[in-house]
Length: 285
Ligand SMILES: NC(=O)c1ccc[n+]([C@@H]2O[C@H](COP(=O)([O-])OP(=O)(O)OC[C@H]3O[C@@H](n4cnc5c(N)ncnc54)[C@H](O)[C@@H]3O)[C@@H](O)[C@H]2O)c1
Image 1: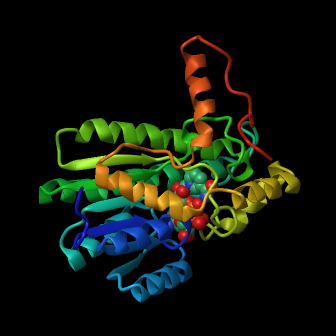
Image 2 (image 1 turned 180 degrees about the vertical axis):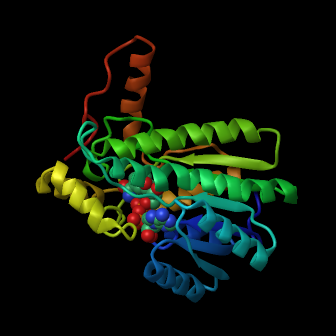
Image 3 (image 1 turned 60 degrees about the vertical axis):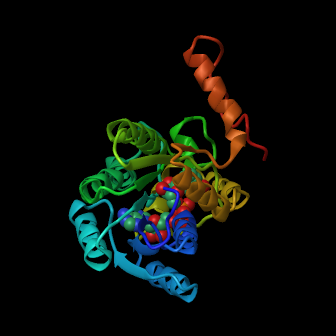
């Protein structure tokens, strides 16, 4: 999509972090922005900040883990702006614990937002995007933790999170192939540690996430991960690179390249040419 000006973008998880910066940069390109977030306070603050930068904004409180909530979001966006050209399916939560003891509820909660949230957005937005027959683009926010399980820095080293992001990468690749030959492009954004509030107030149930994490991991581990995120990439850089990819209709968006050698080693292991990358090998802490 070369020209974004005057068109409409929907950003889920737009109240904070990467989603808010995506909304900001899409707004700077002249897009109308539909901000969706579970947390009403974040949504209000983010919408006010964007309006202050002269962006036309519709804020819709949304729980992406619920299909009917995402359908209501799509209806609100279409009622207000008529068409949707860009969807950033970005809302996500971090949580987790050991594969054999983490409560099933943790798996369900993380999959609800991080996997089903994307599925709900595809189901709600791809049909009207196809019907409008104009250039459009769908962005999945996955993670470098969706390409590499030895990724050390995701909140609480959570297998539930990693699995949800592997699923997101798979879903993005399937959508890419299914939409080839249409006017809808697809990108898969795989950030590494990014300096956001994920794991501190990312979503309404952060207290439950932390309680689960503290049962399964030491406080030191939780705090260490937070410290790693604080040293992570600026979400503004992640968002800028994503908007470039939307304009160039590029699939992969890997904003932090220090993860690439470990990903290469993983593929070399798949090819029978070496060992799996060691946990934490590319981290400088
Ligand atoms: N921060 C990182 O290190 C990092 C790294 C890789 C990938 N990611 C991914 O980037 C995306 C954005 O994360 P972030 O770091 O900006 O986190 P963040 O916590 O700063 O922002 C996430 C936003 O999503 C909202 N949200 C949570 N659950 C929701 C739901 N069910 N429905 C709608 N909104 C919901 C939260 O209220 C919050 O405003 C996530 O998918 C995350 O997994 C983050």
